[in-house]
Length: 444
Image 1: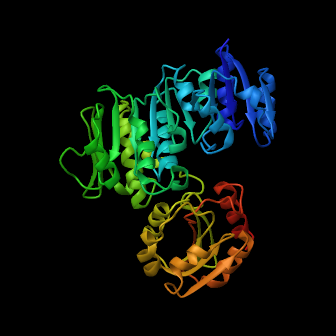
Image 2: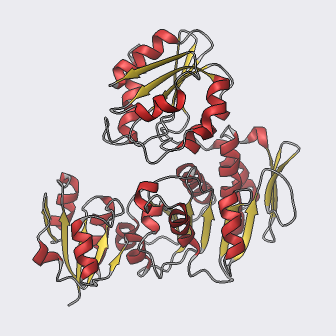
């Protein structure tokens, strides 16, 4: 019996274990940290052996194949030991893809993945399709393949989830943009990160679709270098030769061989330039999946946004508070600042991922009156911004941060949490950071 070992017992790892067990493999799960009770219960119910808070080498290095959770970098000793023994290491996405015939709409990019994924899922579900939501948002892809029977999956894929995919194929691949992010995971080599993102189109044929932002310089450069077999569906804010989706005279236009479709920009539920890109990409996906025009139009109009992404929290004494905790890189913060129409008290900081803050410097100078650095180490932020805005403060907790913001903001201002950084220095994750922000604001 083939032995499958799963490293990491979160949503991805537990789902992979359940699918592997269903397929008749000898399954063992190992997590170097504690396993949540809900996942322990699921593993026990499926009679799957597991261990937590350590790795037992003899139980792992005898695997025929290892499924690695996306959060585990290759540099950890256990992964290096597996590589040395030439034991194949794959991802949950690779594994689950072997056991489903469902059509997959896969979405990646440095920014906008979650919004576009949820919007695409909303349109397809509203259009009557039997569709699952998986990947970096929703439930484990493998777990759903094991227990559900969907005809379609809309899957958000980070670069980490695309790593260790080899035969998996997306029927529809969406690449929103590529900006420097997670470079610490890719040896601070931008090309390695770009290559990881482009794994989303590996194995595609002429029957598959590749949807991408035509104006992204990294994407265009790669397309010129690569032999891409799939049908191309570029989108842009401007009409142009070969562009399949664009904005013209305040109207969103989809122009594909499948069907033509239009909706006025003001009818879209999502505001901001960045969300125009997300709406264009989702609308093309729905269009080539043969969702009816009226269903697409209605879904684009009634979609509710994503928590922690330019999320309105409250208006306190005339000051608007916006939670954009999901902005864990500089480009995300750029889009947030670009959409601001009032003076801004901006909260930055966290775990730096090799950020270049020069990208937002002009917007900070133009729109930001006060900066608050929320992090254990704010030295790089001070180096980038000292002397460029009237006031800068440091804070070590969310409560302190919101208190400073409250004192500095006046009627008509916006307090914007858009950190540019990961959250792991002071918070469990970006969701924890965003929820703490909302709770502190509501206590004002």
